[in-house]
Image 1: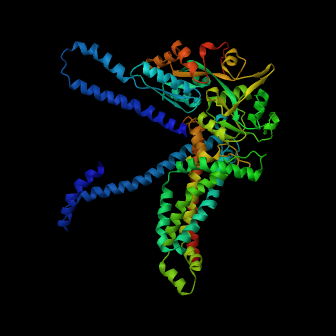
Image 2: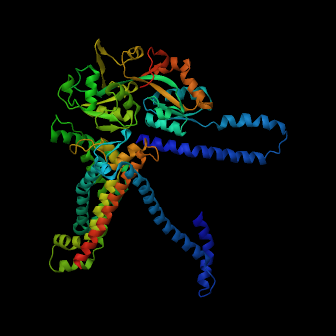
Image 3: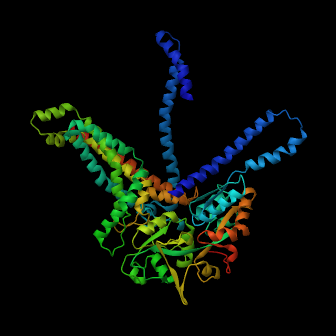
Length: 320
Length: 315
């Protein structure tokens, strides 16, 4: 409704403004439109700050109730008994996100190098379109597919690795990491491809003119030049993997403990928040502690993104 | 997952529906006032406000909570809605504790629960015991446990607390035991834990937040064992009898009503304060002989409250 009024009010006066260039008549339409757009920009900032402030407020209370050391290092998470040891949750999140970075982000990055530097030019848009579709698939779909098709196979793998006598299942951090790897690969691929496409063509031409092969150009010129962007792509993938909830919940098993191995049920911060929020009465320790864990997750993800900036800046400084 | 959807639905319905309804009502009332020029001023004050709003304003009766009780409430809902034109009941499941919390907060009219309300909620809630349901340990079927017909309570406690890790330790063949738990808010977990383990002493393991999903998981996981309401008994699952002094006690209606099989609980439908209006009518229907004697026996796993020869005051 707002935009409509702006549009109708603005159109004629804008035209008039053009015709009467140099006149002192104020262009109200433009002023209103500018104000609206500025408000949109401000809103984004205010909303983000407000979200962080709300999480921090309840989260800090939760930390106060439990104690930061107990919350981060305690190994028993049992809200129904008033025990809040967040280590199993943090451990599960960190391991599955790191695992995803290894099995998903690195291959995706190399795939982007292949497509950008080495693959036939005509095939590039096919790769790109395919990955764009893959990136648009909702996470619940990935989770459901993994539950039906990945978990039974991982069960088989687990038994092959540990033998029939060990209590292992297909649900656990291995499945979770593999699923997350598949989920973040398209994002990492597309971001990496963008980073590589920003490398100036003259650099590649210069490299080729010096007699370097396509492989040498890719690995000695393009990748180092796009280094910052590639780091950002991988870190972004990591942050997304750390925050993913729905899909992970389906395959991670939901046991609130530090697992013996990658093939026994575990949990992560985000899945545990989903499980526990139903029983958490607002403004109690049980609810505040969930916000504390959200805060930990936020710090983890934001920290990783900030780290990627830092790495980028250092890399730039080193080169200059 | 299911429970998240439920949670969202109840909270959305709980907070917005009344506002929407009262808002709508206020609008209608406003229109009414301006439109009819009131031919007979004495009549509307007595007739119109009584007849018109009372039938329409009564929204659906909303119930949430125990997934063990859900099949029974659904059966009652179907019969009740066909017999009472215009009445409607909405049932969702998300665990007994959620049902209790929802009814206490006013998000739903009826909180379905497998367990007695805890002390902190007891004061404001009114209990309606509508049925009895038995629970049993159920497991994935395989050659490793096919010879085990009954397990003693002590052995069950050892399995579910993680002390016993292999089927061969309870009379089967060598196969690791995979314990699957219900989530912390589950009434089934609470009842089974109280009676078999003397409290929530379950080993931390795989967790399912819904009985239906658990049945599917048990079927596909080799060596898996869990606990379910008898309404979820399934021929593709192994259901264990209890080993007692006088032989195996099967989890069936006769043994539960006589008190021989101890793992059972009442199914409660809690209301906040005394039930009124459509909620009362629905609850009256569920405890009526018409339902308890004719419909309930056909719903798998439930026992009419009138059949019980033993009683209980707490879980």
